[in-house]
Image (tube, rainbow, N blue to C red; front, side, top):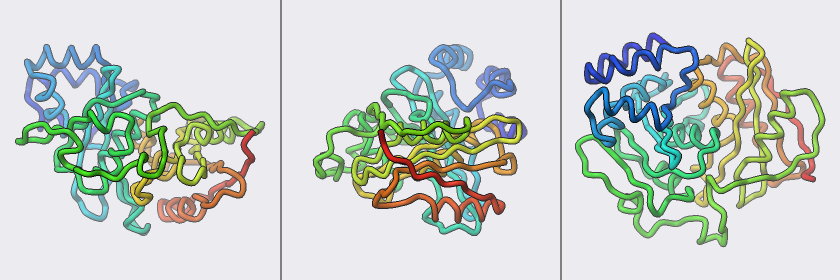
Length: 296
């Protein structure tokens, strides 16, 4: 991953590339920049906030995994905290094409998994497709969210998605990024408990099929992912994809996975098991442990 990041610097303005290099080469870099780091990069590069976010898109796109399309898309989610979260599209060879992850989903999930309370803007290097516009409409900041694109004037999300269908049309008040706590009764090994914690923070107001996944990494570290539903259903982000996004953005490979655990609600109207198993099989024949647990 370091090589891909280094290559991406060739597409950044020279002063910005020089300022970025110490950050992205550090072992602690996890594909995001704090408010203070954003300020340092603006000062070093002489770029405005908007121009800086656009100039960082090659860095975001370097995280893309595109064995099917070979079309790399990068996105940056700007949090109300001032932190910027990178994201990129992900494709899974030998898995159904609808299991792919879009760049905007990746950046948004990144911010959500880092417990960012609200987003103010999304910067992306290509116009968001309808799938992503609908996904973004689930956010608690959808009404105010600004979209930045190269060579285009900034516009609000609802300029791209007028007369939008969203949570309120289905009588849902809470939206994505609003706090979620659904307590699972589980006492087990740390990986199972991590998956249960992810499930407890998942967003599933339409089906209540709360679920989370934990992926063990070879060096005794793990990443987790949460289910994020959508009013239009299809743009929902499964927990495995959520975890794979975090795996990639933290600099790991699927080859580092040593164990995978899914925790989901017992007797839910839908299950993530079969789709998650199919993707893990396509990625390298990984097995999936599944626990169905009652809510407290």
